[in-house]
Length: 359
Image 1 (cartoon, one colour):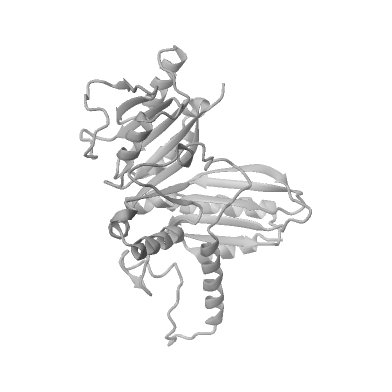
Image 2: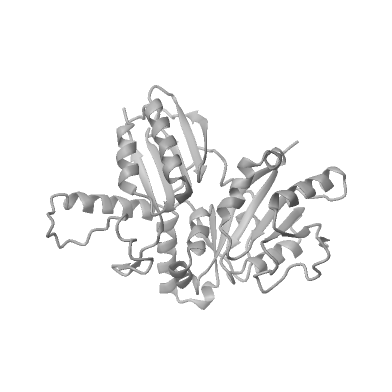
């Protein structure tokens, strides 16, 4: 039986998740989608409640979509849905899970890898994060959950761009890219977005594609050159260093050159020298043990010693998976490329350690 693709829809309070979901539940798009509104605790934190009648657990919409409100256990809800599907009582071919505005999407994503029954029937397609263009700068400064939602995203939908000026939106895009260069950013207007921007994104696929924002890569290379230019600084150096690992100690309100320094940020490792398989396995295993809780998402396409095929790896927190990819093309640049997105990760330790694993 084909696995049911599942999307996690997240975003901070008031970002516009519910508006987007209401459109999906009412629009005629031909998909049969089960929407799980995953609430924790007694109170629904979002102002707009999808299912007004709280006694009604499952409501069928006129376009064939299903909406169910779950308080608490997501695994139970997913199991119940599959049971009713198997009995022919419900018909759906994909699932969207809306998390509350204050939720960290990490544990929700991990459910798909650690729970056997969930993994038997469902496949995590992507984490889609809705970001409010007007309020996001402040939310990212003040709330770690908002940062995590961005760090976890496979796709970012930017809402309320009409309420912010162009300069604000551009600054926000730059900041979001620095936090998560993997996630393409699409502006949405009052929840109006093509369904293809939300479903079937294959963000959790172990594929050989690692699309990183080219501006981010350029900025990383500039920063790298800048660091080398000041390698010989002494204790009295007056240069402004951009070392990502040291400017988080004073909370998330530091401004470097007008930048907001976020606890959650991304960095990239690239090399045209192949990895030693044993050393890399050992090093990555150690990283995940020590820093796993702070590693939100990481993904890479790897060049391994003596291998004519790419190795693809990715992970969420402590859960890491690898797969053999396609053969390296004859005229293709053979290069490992890895991106790590996490909270206050010691970039130097990661980069130096990975360099030690090269042949």
